[in-house]
Amino acid sequence: MASTVFSPLSKTIFSGQRLRNSLMQLALFVLLVSPAQANERIEESAALIDRLISHIQMVISNNPSEEEVLTQTNYIIDHYFDYDLVARFSAGQAWRSASDSEREAYKKAFRDVMLNLAKSQFKSLATLEYFPKQATPKGDKLVVASGIIHDKTGEFADATIAWRVSTKAGQPVKIIDIEVENISMLITRQQEHTAIIQQNGGSFQALIDALVQQAEDITKTSEKN
Amino acid sequence: MIIRLSILTIASALLVSGCSSLPAEQRSDARDPFENSNRQVFAFNMVVDDAVIEPVAKGYRELPESVQTALTNHAQWTSHPSTAVNSLLQGKLENAALATVDFLINGLTLGLADLTDDADDPAREDFGQTLSAWSLPQGSYMVMPLLGSGTARSHTGFLVDAITNPLGYSGVGGVDVIRVTSTPVSVVTFRGNQFDQINDIKYNATDPYARTRSLYFQYREGQIIDGDPNVSTAADDAFDSFLNQGN
Image 1: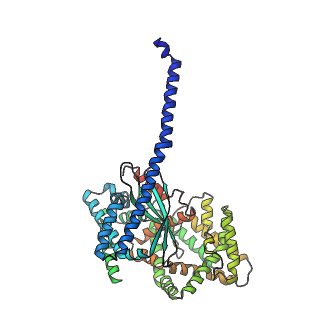
Image 2: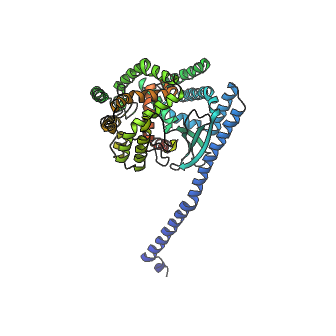
Image 3: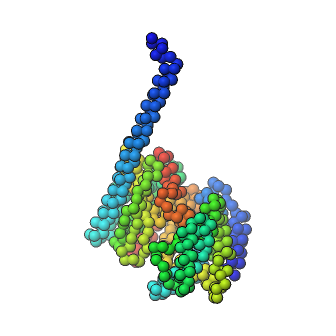
């Protein structure tokens, strides 16, 4: 009878079977789907770094003019980096309370600093070689791909470099940070920017002004040299 | 003499900083409650750098490369006894053995020549790292006159290393000269070898104090975890938390 089928005992067995099935499915997901996806993201991250290195080598081999370096750096920032995340992270907590116009001004000023730095230092990359070592997931949205930078002239000792790659589901993998010998570019920037805002009574505009000034100073210094 | 100076410096800085702790909401970094007084000491250290250390480091860079290498080797060599002791205290037996062997072999030239294989150089270990391995909290960030950046833990470690350096108890002739000269030699070789990087912070950073503090914490963490890429760092946690906040 129907009532015996749905007796408390059979209900328990039924629930137990469902639970087992669910656990089995979860285990299968963890064993098969998740690692596959994770491995895919790790491989994608490592491939992104390889493409970036090849791109930089290609640019260097063409002996680019300053204008070409700027064009290529802009291209690199837009195609290999998640500049929106980079800007948001580097601004720290102040990003949340900044107005849209302040955010846009900050993004432009920070990009100008990076562009001018790239312009002044691009040639020094010519003697460097990159040897990838490993890529490790850190949580489910981040992969750290690391390697060694070797200076062909022997002037600088080998240094470890790590690329933090955002691997958010449904989005292309993009670099959000570069770390050399455990020094993260973005953490350093974020902490410096937070201090500038704090030293100026919480003014986000003061940070923008400081970055505009820094971009100009970098240009002047590189012109002097 | 150097030990007395270090004790005096650290004690006076602790006294000064103890009077000016900032409330949490006014700190630009939670680890830096003495930011105002630290900034003053940092400014003083920059004046000393302008007047003495940078010019001397510039002179060091004019020396023949072989002399620069010899002085750098010597500075590293004088730290080996301390590295050996601290490696032992942290259970890093291989590093302790490497430091001991390096110290003994390179001692034939007072450390001026590196007679051992470069690939086997021991990793520098100090008592601050030992205290960290023993899970002692790092304490507040403090900039000391002449000594520079550190935390309560690392400055304490520096002091203990200065007092307990086995080099001082070795009884080897001329060891007092080595002890007296080792700190200035280390300062000059460090400043000279990192000349462009330090000048970049000094002259190009929008806030040299904040950048130095940030670099100190990250570099120190790298030393403490021995650069192991499988250990999650504070930076990894910061990015993980950022990406999980819906960014």
